[in-house]
Image (cartoon, rainbow, N blue to C red; front, side, top):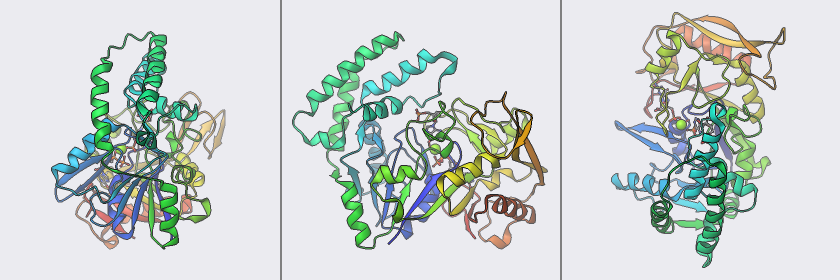
Length: 423
Ligand code: GDP
Ligand code: IMO
Ligand code: MG
């Protein structure tokens, strides 16, 4: 009877989708707890790459139930596209995909508002994925939102109309000159809602409560990363939900004392997509190599990801905020061939050397202090057992475990399901 959490410790894209897929065989239920189609979770097996945005990453397994929790925001249009993709693989998802009635819906006008808001910010834009995430969570906390459960009520289209009209006035307010054809967008939206309604809507908190009583195992899947958390991330360059461990409690209705392990995933280096501070960002050949070897392009938007050395100050902060019990290090294979590896262990900040994440990590405020380690040259991608890992990689891992006071239990050496070393 355990609920475990899996979440990203950096700025997203750590490899959550891959690891959820790897771990699913040990769980009865995989439950997404926040975010929406701003996420792009990639998994690979049998030579095929799948990208999921809203659907939990356990969907390709036969038995596990996949639940979209109340903390998630759903765009029916993107959800339908995800289902269409599953259909291509003849996947029978109907019996194993459940949706919380309390999850909020992303309307076409939320997406336009997102674009208008970003356009109005000019250089200060967040670099949002333009999926309507911010405006939808604003309507949620503003108590205006439309939820999945509302689709079962007769008057939902009137409520939709009232909210969309309000959004149109807000879009005009931005004076952003964004062109859109709302009739076309709405046709697509209503068609997609019809498809969404063919799935099973549930009172998910009650479902999960019963599941726990029956001794079922639950893995909560996070989206984005801890440094994108609305409270603890690099505000305002963050997403609009709590991506940290507490978000799993509010996003699923799971009590804090029911959570056992918190799996924290990080890349052996750091990436970030979108705007905002990134102290260890590289603008040289090393960063270029990470981007190329690691294929660092966003799974949702295709934008190039910014790359840099591992930032242990930020990682430690994420381990603390989440109460991580087990770490999983991804993309170690990408660092093969670097003669020297750098790890940021402190910041120079206002004339002092500090080892905690300060309020403001803009480049003019912090300069990273690096520890250097010897790199390894071996190709890791065919390795399957910890005994095969090069000595220098083991030293890299031991250094991190000591600094983070947490064991690294998985070392991932490639995108495929099988390229996963358990320690
Ligand atoms: P998520 O959002 O956390 O699920 O991560 P993404 O799917 O957005 O980005 C991770 C990318 O790295 C995907 O393209 C994965 O296929 C890939 N990937 C995951 N683990 C590894 C690994 O250990 N090595 C390499 N080379 N690629 C990996
Ligand atoms: P996964 O789950 C990486 C970033 C965006 C932008 C900021 C706000 O795949 O790790 P939003 O659309 O949420 O308003 O954008 O957050 N962002 C992500 N970056 N991975 C993600 O998800 C992200 N989801 C949002 O690039 O900087
Ligand atoms: Mg991603």
